[in-house]
Amino acid sequence: MITDEIKEVFIEKFGGEGDIRTYFAPGRVNLIGEHTDYNGGHVFPCALSMGNYAVARKRDDNIIRWFNMTYPDNGIIVADINELEPNDNGKWYDYQEGVIWAFQQNGYQVPSGYDMVMKADLPAGSGLSASASIEELAAVIIRDLFAINISMEDCAVMGQYSENKYNGMNCGIMDQFASAMGKKDCAIFLDTATLKYEYVPLNLKNEKIVITNSKVKHSLADSAYNNRRRECEEALKDLQKVVNINTLGDLDEDGFEKYKSSINSGVSERRAKHAVYENRRTIEAVALLRNGDIKGFGDLMHDSHVSLRDDFEVSCKELDILAEEAWKLPYVLGSRMTGGGFGGCTVSIVENDHVDEFKEVISKIYKEKTGLTCEFYISDAADGAGRIDNY
Ligand code: GLA
Image 1 (cartoon, rainbow, N blue to C red):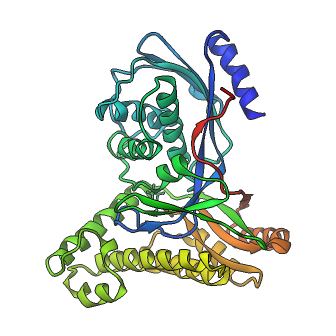
Image 2 (cartoon, rainbow, N blue to C red; image 1 turned 135 degrees about the vertical axis):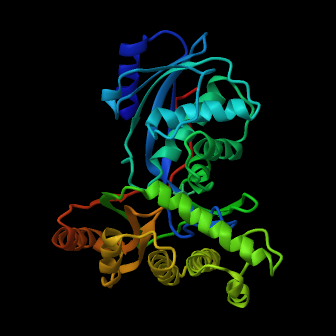
């Protein structure tokens, strides 16, 4: 077990005495609703069974001592919880420290530091929200070790707050929400304007959700993400001059077509078009899934990819190859890029009996076309972050 292994390292580095506790926070895959979460739209992610695990024990002073078995070369990170400074270095410990800082900034008392060893079974930088998983891991550790009275929804909010304000990444709430609030065998239909959500059972009897990792992460992905967000905000400002809306999510397709000429730049218009149409697709896709129409759901995944590729321009050659080749296969019901884009993963719905064939065909073509070897993960939808030892 991965947790036994982590505990052994914890004892070796920090000693075995006292109240040592074990935690897990999952990564996520988003089924549909991409780049809608900072536009007041809907998203439909589920938590994965892969994520980050930690073993932790509180200390009596303000010091943190952390070791990550996934990055052993970083050694033991030592810091004072009252001297944390926002930065955009993007190291694993920056995401974890950011959450302590976010709790402090939002009036939660973090009374002391803690010793911690962690390890991931989720690939970082692949669009499966490894960083949100680290943030939610930190949130549940702090919440539990110091018995802080905070809901899991607010743990998600703390994660987003820290990523925005401590790590300089202007992300929406989807990833942290999925990691904090995941539920076994369900996806989360979340309205990011209100944070109202519903769990929708993924009753896939004849199909599996297959994640394909392109194994590329293009540089500048973070700055491109922040640019997309800015372009959407510009479009919203222009639209607000002619129509009374709070977010792009308040418009439907007809509303967008009616008012789109008020948007000053062609680029912002295409970004806003994606945000509006993707939000409507997400609402429709969930209704189809509830009616058992997996084929209809898959068709909307296709449309989502096309819109992300052409209007939002966050796909890349490698993701396009993976999705477009998957669309050609009769046993694939839907396939699209998932997450922020510019590399990372696609998500596909594949008939059970053809999963092996899917992997073979896609890896062969992908290798031929890119020279790269892709990786596949089949993960059930899993529960959200929390303490996982028996207590
Ligand atoms: C990243 C962000 C999320 C969301 C997606 C795109 O994963 O962290 O908030 O915006 O991109 O849907």
